[in-house]
Structure formats: C-alpha cells, structure tokens
Length: 114
Image (cartoon, rainbow, N blue to C red):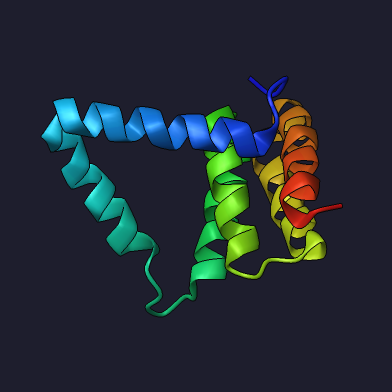
C-alpha cells in the first residue's frame, strides 16, 4: 500500500469509502459518528487526530495512518507533534508499531511538504 504516494492513496480511500457508503448506508452512520467524535469538544481536532494517528500506528492500520496523518497536518500538527504521537504509539505497540511508525513519518513528511 505504501508504494503509492500518500496523497494518491488518500484520494483512493475516500473514493472507495464513498462508494461503499452509497451501497451500504449503514456504514455512513458510522462515518457520521466518527465525524462527531473527532469534532472539537474538550480536545481540539489536532489533538484528536494525533491520538487517532497514534492508535493507527499501534494497531498497524495503513489506510488509517494515511487518513489521520493528513487530517493531523490539516489541523495544524507539526513534524515534532507527529513524531511525539509516533513515539507514544511505539511505547504501546512495540517493534511492529515502530515499523509502521517509520511509514507514518514518511507519510507525514509528504503531507508536510518536506
């Protein structure tokens, strides 16, 4: 999956998600919940996206890494903040999370334009 540029992969994920929601509207209800849960309340959007990114790394979800890295950058996350989220994810997920953390960092650099 990571052979494809992250921006291109994100576009593909969004397209597939919309297609599936069109055919299975129940999944759209879950997407609505995710949107509501990630909206700013006690925590701002950037913090929530960094948490989501850390979880994505820890559970080794490649599409989730792409999705939440882009969202974190869009919400104003810096390279240092993304690295901190990756570090915490590695604490929780060990060696496998470290390998996905490397990929998350690569994706972050793309979205940060570095």
